[in-house]
Image (cartoon, rainbow, N blue to C red):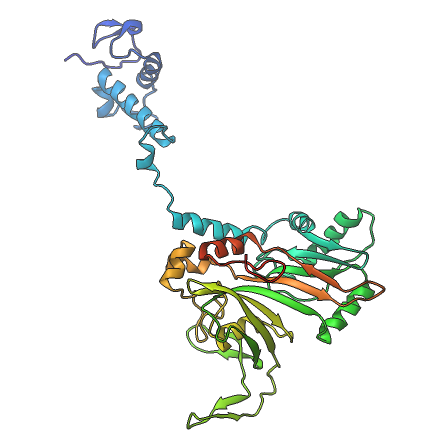
Length: 397
């Protein structure tokens, strides 16, 4: 077979098919002609150190064409095909993966954003405003104060929020009136004056503020309504992962014979904690519970539900176990209805929402009751579990 050699140049005829380049049957595509000519005209010595390689001495035109077609085929394969081959190169996202991506996006959407973006989100979440206070529906995953897990906090963006509410020239300073955990959503009260802030702080300190939380818990509390009155204390958990968490410090313990209880000495470091609870609805191994804390102790509701009633709040991975830090273990039926696997349960957010806050009247104002809507992820969970929400009259809907 005739071979095509390069010797300092090239003519206008293909020695393989003995036709001119314009009518060459091998190089019928004009773009391939150009690429082959460039390949044959490549200067000697850049890649071989000044010597013509053995592979380049006997290159056939058909080999060059085939190589060029293969390279073009590879470049096309990198693009997303529009044919049925798409299923082979891009696997479809499973429902579990889609659900996990939604939960990941939820937990990261406002934690590391520009302060102006967070301030704008808080401005949109205002649910009440008068001359003394502003109430917002706090989003999930945003801390009130500086945190190592987030680049910004609600406290840091309060000056920007004040300008959005009152204008750029305002001198109004907003004050946080009470605490909410980073992963707790719901009603957050901001005072617009120092006088209002001091008054509301005094109401919280005197336990005169009525607060109601809604929580989705794993299990069904027994009895369905009652009061948990067990002090709470912060303890160190030793082991492979030493850490601190709040725990129970009961004043009574079961007697040795199991026939009664005996009172024990109260721990000086324990805090009195009292929680009213009421089951609103329950099905498929989970419940929607209304919690009303009478006292204000760190993580009081989470500890009472997990360790006193044995019904931890859904997504509360900190208090899912006492002696270790691990994702919450969920029953198979609950996982199936939530569209998750146990290995992905760690992405579940804390299902605790500050539903309603009642402020006694002051400065000529009547009693103020502020309610906030449930976040979308919580209502979605209720729908998946077929748990009903009570209407305004207290009946289930």
